[in-house]
Image (cartoon, rainbow, N blue to C red):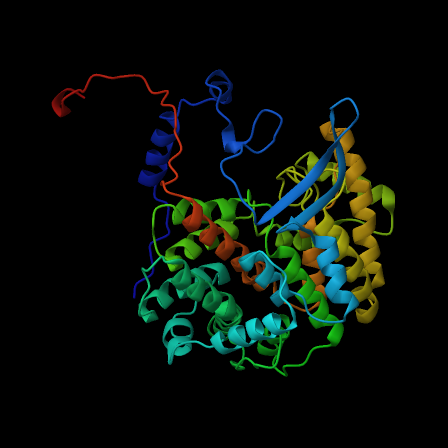
Length: 453
């Protein structure tokens, strides 16, 4: 098959210029027309567009005078504080992702028998149709793992005997199957990329029914299939922390929007994957790692003064990708702290000791502390700025020797649980297609015949 012609010709450049000149919308128009751009009000708060029982974020308290004040961030899954959930399974020295998936899907914590039955169902579903790996993944290698994942999900539609049935039981069956096979689709897609695009040896490990989701990811990814208990524990924890986030995130909202049209599960999940791929959503942890690589090659990271100067340059669009961002810092909702980052930070500290790279972890801590001060001063942000989960997840994945190409797909392996819960909730409670209104600011014009233009 011939490749698409990616050359931008002078004619295309001219058309792009015409398109730019045709855009007369300026920022002031949003205020004049009372438009909440990006579904956020003038204070940056999200505009409520629905109701959910799945998860909740808390970032503010109310003082005795009724004023909202920033507080340490909290995240709740079905009413349970994420810190309590994590503390519960870590205290008992077991994996938590499967328990978390059950909670998000069914609104209740499973007992021992329910959890074992649920894990058995996921293990049974952790298989792909005959020849799917060869025909849909290995014979069609790609350069981007998220696109490979999306393509694979859409391809599974053809293998489903009942793909368009949106009854709760059928959608739940499809959701459980996708939760089970996402690690296979992503890891095998990476092996295909690694072999056909990078010239490396090809190996495919089948999943092991006796292993957890996190263990299977490491087992299938690594040539020798080996991993340490701490590595599996921390990857499992990362999956728990990424499984869902407040319902108002871009990919969850995408899931609601697309589901409301009545479409099939595979199309809905593919749309959510497209959302997560964007660097403003799921791709930020890769940016954190590459930003640190640039920092270490540009300055003496043992010198706090040089680090602070570098961070100022980042904000001034004078360093790294000149975006004006310090990646991994700040959040649309959290101010004082991101609970997910707090939890993952302590595990990153523990893993850095096992890997013998405590200096790397200390650098991240230093940057997080200095960046909060620099952003507050330069951006005049007084609500507080803290590290978010992307700040530490990239470091954790790097210490786990996970390839950067899989950073965002691992996010997807976890978030498919949240998407599934939101899809089911939308089907249960909605009755109308989600159709937002846009105000047209274009002036009426008289048509001009072709010979007079």
